[in-house]
Length: 60
Ligand SMILES: [Zn+2]
Image 1: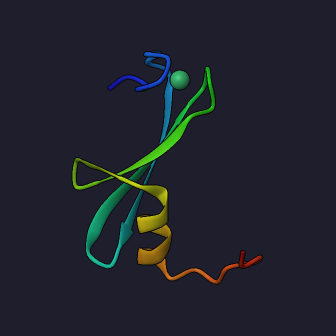
Image 2: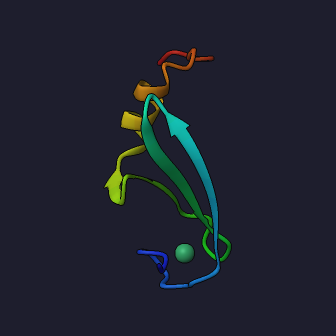
């Protein structure tokens, strides 16, 4: 697994179980790019936030 932006392999990974799905947050140590994957598929951050149904601090 490499960062899709800078191809650095030093990634921070945080795995969560969300409504039955395995969701992993990956963060690049080099360029600070962040993305999620769910069951091995890349998902947009907005989809994960919707999935989690977290309260929005500052609606825009
Ligand atoms: Zn990167």
